[in-house]
Image (tube, rainbow over all chains, first blue to last red; front, side, top):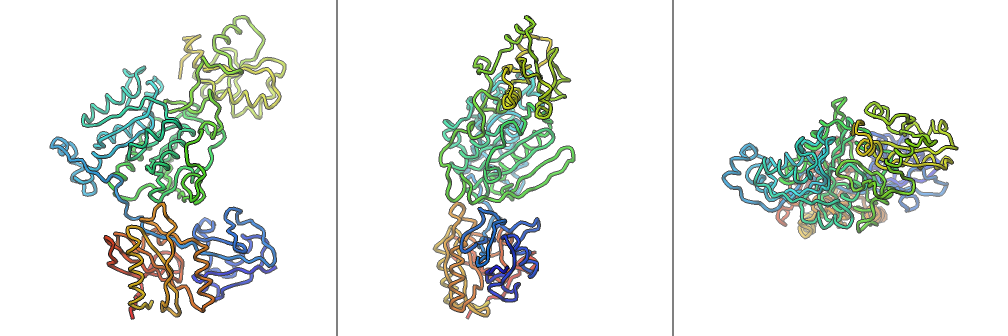
Amino acid sequence: MGIKVTIPTALRRFANGQATVEVPGNTISEVLGNLTTEHAQLRPHLYSEDGKLRNFVRVYVNDEDIRARGDNTPVNEGDEISIVPSIAGGNLAKLDPIIKDRAKLTNEEIKRYSRHLILPEVGIEGQERLKAAKVLLIGSGGLGSPIALYLTAAGVGTIGMVEFDTVDFSNLQRQIIHFTGDVGKHKLKSAEEKLKAINPNLNFIPHPVKITSDNALDIIKDYDLVLDGTDNFPTRYLVNDACVMLKKPNVYGSIFRWEGMASVFAPHLGGPCYRCWYPEPPPPGMVPSCAEGGVLGVICGIIGNIQANEAVKLIIGKGKPLMGRLLRFDAMDMSFREYKIPRDPNCPVCGKNPTITKLIDYLEFCGIGRGEEGGSSGDSIVETKDEELGPDDISVETLKKMRDRKEDFVLVDVRNPDEFAICAIDGSVKLPLPELPQRFQELPKDKLIVLHCKSGGRSGRALKFLRSQGYGKLKNVAGGINAWAERIDPNVPQY
Amino acid sequence: MKLSQQLLHQIHRQLESGYPNEACGVMLGKNGVVTEIVSADNERTDSARNRYLIDPLAYMKIERGADQRGLEVLGIYHSHPDVAARPSQFDLDHAWPNFSYLIVSVVKGKAVESNSWRLRDDRSAFDREAVEIS
């Protein structure tokens, strides 16, 4: 069966000068595959090295763009396929500095920044832009710590920080802006002390709130640039959407275990946004948080400083920004890999016809119910509150009473084996959440099953799973083993 | 590529009036001689200062119109506001073969330099081509 394919002028030389050719095939990809086998010179112009149709090649069937339907779209005799060039180009070599103002330096500052001032790309001009810059950090945790320390030292004039949490012992392994003596102190207070000690010229603006759909635009609008150091999906999407709407560059970083990633999202400067890359969040629980999976502390410094580096470049308008590119770092291999992130013309936020034009409910968007664990560190907008027990929850006090009365139930610990080694509640059945789908039949259906994890999030998901498998008598220990350690058994360590 | 002084002037005026944004259009003709230019809208309203994009359907219409009148699309012209008339990496990544890419540097609203470039068949680089003004 022959399908008529219209060749654009630019490619006709590679198809013996013909404007149309007839090629057999039952789908778009078969037809184009046969076309490029017959006329091999067409191939490099239609397909990139990884075998994908180049993004500037549009394919129309009977004048309908088939991009949305994919290249497995069937074609029938009589259909006409047109290869249509999307003509694009432009100059991305030079980016204007995002900071147009300059703030004059004092003599003390000239001395302080002398190593920048003699660096041709920074100089007086760049340093004065840094001083005029207003930068917002979302979170003062693993990533926020090095970002804040280095940008303050570099001479960024105004740094705002959004954070509602207090310093915890478990933060100190990676959140290097906080010291042992700060445990229990508000993180903003702790951060401000260190930053002012490094550079008393800093104008520090604390935002002691959780960032939400109600306040995000108000907080972000007064800043020139945002650095996202959050560890959970609802906040990441919220910050992305707010930055797109306000036309603020969003310097993204994330870390997990031995890996980290960074990129710059700025559709108003020609790049993609976070949604162009990840249109939808993963199902809740599929991607574990650092509190569940662990994270190498050192990674925070590496990724946070890549973010700080990109912020400086954007402010002074020098170099090639990490835009449209995702940098992925593997600390075990000690390797960096770069991935291209194309802009999605149909992106619901930054595309041509956006469908999301105001901030939405990000917990709902990410499939996270209120009271369920969405993240872990202080950056989270979701938290578990013991006093707000859900219908499936029991407190650690209730669990203690049930044990003391020797009630008949099975206590199941769904944490990972590495965590069992840290601490455990006597007599619990150890069944890690990832193994639950294969092993749940080990649990009796006729007995009450009480589930716990570290703080209540994973055991909540285990409960939902067991309920879907027909288990009727289920309870979740609110606050998990950490609440048990805090309120019931002081011999159990918290982590 | 051959081009009359009058057409070059027309291109310059269109690109100057688009400043500080990038502006663009299509050159039609035969046997390497441009006889007609068609201005096109820059669809990149989000980033018009450093990007241009011609809507594929609009381009398809221009090409079909040319085919019907026995003309060919010879190439594309576009402006580089405040930067040199040299193709960027982005231009290279998105270039089509067998076209003349006429790039005009427009500095502070004035067209100051025009160069024409052709993509190598292996997509590795652009080569500058002579522009004969008649």
